[in-house]
View 1 (tube, rainbow, N blue to C red):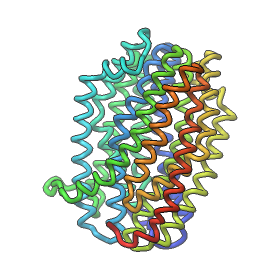
View 2 (tube, rainbow, N blue to C red):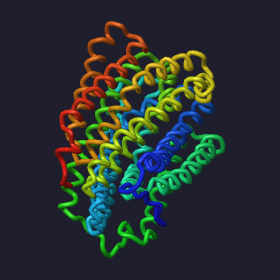
View 3 (cartoon, rainbow, N blue to C red):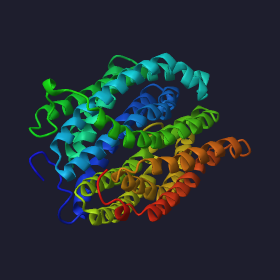
View 4 (cartoon, one colour):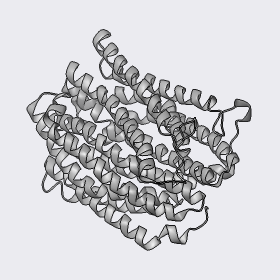
Length: 450
C-alpha cells in the first residue's frame, strides 16, 4: 500500500487484500445504513410510528433513484481498475473528470424530476392517507440533496477503483456523526418531524462529498482534481456507460421490484409497514457485507484483467466467495440473536417487532444464494461483462417478484407470503449467475482488456 492507501491487487496473496478492501467498504455501507436508520429511529421514538412508516415508505423509491447512478459509478470503478492494471495514468485522469460530470448532471436531473413527481410516485405505491403528507414532505427534502449524494458515490468509486476503500469510509463516518447530531437537534430542540431528519441527511451528504472532493484535490497523483484541466472525454464516457448502465439497471431492478413489494406491504397497514421498515434497516447491514465482497471482486478482477493476469481473476472470485460466506453468516447470526432488542430501538410495539422478525428470517434465508449472485455479478463486471448479470437480474429479480405479487399474494394476502418472494427470486438468480460463469468462462476467453 502506498501513501494514498491504495492496495496493490496485482501481486502477492489475495485473501488478505480482499479483506483489506472489502471490510472498510462493508463498514462504509453499514455506517451509511446506521446513520440512515437514525432517521427512522429518531422519528419512531420521538414522533410516532406514523412518522416512522412515512420515512420507511420512501426507502424503495429512494433506492430506485440512487441505485441507478450508483450502478453507473461502477462503470467508473471498472474503467479505473483496468487503467491501473495497464498503468494508463491518462485514462485514469480522464475517467475522474467524466465521472464527476455524470454525478452532478445526474444528481440535478433526479432532484428536479423528483420534486415534480414526488406526490404522484408515492400515490402509485399506495402509501396510506394517514402517513401520505409526511412521506411526500420527507421525499421532497431528501431529493434536494441528490446532487451531493451522487457526487459522493462517484468520488468513492474513483478511490475504490484505485484500491482505496478507507478514504470513503472516513468521509462517511464524519458525515454520519453529523447526521445523527442534526437528527436529534432538529427533532428534539426544534420540534421538527420527518422534515428535520430529511434536512439532516441532506446536510450530512454535503459534508461527505465535500471531504472526498478535498481529498481528490490533495491526492498528488493521477486522481488529483485540477479545475483548469476539467473536461469530458467522450470515449471514456462511452466506456463508463457501457459498463455502468447495465449495472445501474441491475441495481434498479431490485429497487423497482421492491417498490411493488412495498405497495403490497402498505396494503397491510401502518404496523406491518413500521415493522418492515425497522427490519430493513437491520437486514441491509448484512447485505452491505455481501455487496462489499462483490465490489472487491469487481476491482480486483478489473485490475488484474487490465494487467493480463487472468489466473489471479479466478483466484479472486473463489477468495471473495468464501470470505463473503464467512463474514455474512456471522453478521446474519448476530442480527437474529439480538433481533428483538435491535428492532425495539426503532419502535417498542410488540406487533411491530413481530413483523420485523418475520422479515429478517425470510431475508437471511434468501441471502444464502444472494452471495453467489453478488460476487458472481462482480466477477463478470470486472471483465467488463455488465450486460449478462443485468439481464439475469431483470428476469430473476424483477420478473419473479412482480409475478409473485400479482399472482400469489392476492390468494394469500399475508406478510409471510410477501416475504417468501425473496428466497424464491434470489436463489433462482444466484443459480443462473453461476451457470452463466461456467458457460462464459471469462478468465479463459477474455485474455486482453477491452
